[in-house]
Image (cartoon, rainbow, N blue to C red; front, side, top):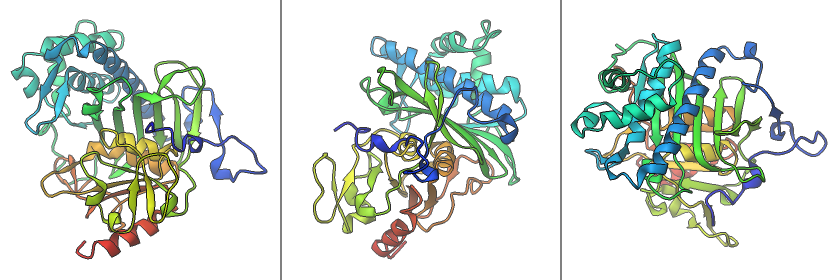
Length: 388
């Protein structure tokens, strides 16, 4: 069973005022933005984010095309996660593009240039960035690119426990998926935070199976506070389509996503339900578990587009949870009608890491749902986790 096949019918519902409730209508808009600019306070920032993520996805596609013929483009970080020229290239490219129009807004991102310097890959990254940067960047130096990467690195900016405006970037969420076959999902994710509120987000997923019959793949998802969640085809011209979470109201009928590193048996709901991955009929206390995909953001994308009902993540003492793995996903799900909290029902707080804004501390873990199921899920998690 393909990870996105089950429930593809929920990704959007065509407009029919007689039979479909208003929240399930299917909107198509032909414009640079899917809503009037005067309705979006941060429309300039959103336009810059869309452009940056689009360019970043193009860089990813090109690097992936040559990845397996160039082994020196894959590295292994100290935490044993793979990282590629694309990770560094995306961070440099997005940093450069955003700093042109919003030079005073700091960037919180995953990578820094030390690893790149140590492995003598600076020139490879520079060439990729120059190829995708906007006009005027064809003379970027190695120092320019390294500085752009480090603009988002650890210790680049100290927030001093004050409300702030800043970008949050995951250059490639799901790097292991990026290194797999052509169908594996990975996401470039960018969000803007203003005074601890995520006000906009853009996700690009180059391998996302298309909804149209023309065989195109790739999707660009955007959200702006108060303006909804929208998608259009990535890398090709297309119309914006508004997206909503699914309408599932029963936990045993929901479609679940979990982290590939966390088996169903490690989650509290496993004491109530057995998980079934294949597409056959469910029996007894079985629930539908969608095949895993790498990273967290693709799971947020699945919930926000209505292709999954729930994403569960358990916090683990041996691993920190990074803000860039969740920020853009949170607003995309919220604006699609869903809900995101920790396991105690508390909203995710991006300011708990007061000085750097790089780590979040959700109690127990993270629950991402279509909203209709959220209270039921929290009650089940609480009853199955008495020590939470």
